[in-house]
Image (cartoon, rainbow, N blue to C red; front, top):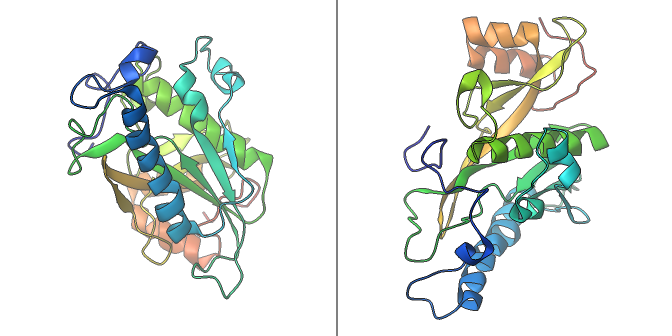
Length: 258
């Protein structure tokens, strides 16, 4: 895990921080000033970075709900988590500054600097949890929204110490292979490969006033493909996916390339 990114055991406690803890207790005159700083960072991510990377962000953001967390066994939900959500970005015309003939789902909120202030935030470090997710699909679908929301909720609970990460570890990292369903066989797409996007898509990291943010692209793969990536080479798997015309898409119903 990159130095400076919030991780299990050394993070701001996202569960027990009280509402009064959200504001700054030092040089800023009042909570309204802290709120202005915080919202400016949020707006910078969505209005500058996301518009540059993804163009049209769709009709609005699909926020996490208490039900998302209840399905993970969490009844008491930090109200801040319910402001995190997912954009459903449609394909773009050739005239757009972003070229994309498919849909992309983009998380927003994982990099929110909860508990930080202008004085305590370190731009050379990571903002919030230090990452946001993307997921590319050929067609729009509720399953994609729910998959993104599920993974976001899992990561928030891991960060809060309410869940363990894969293998008993912490937050997801590049090259992790996250299981999201039980496949019928080893050829069914059942895992998400976590990768930095290629430069032909968009940059793998962006900068906010509160710190750096890694972009983690999620690509659906089968158990056989995951095993190939584990024992052989992730780059080799990416080449295979490109050769078969499925990169960078997640298509739960596709056949395995192996």
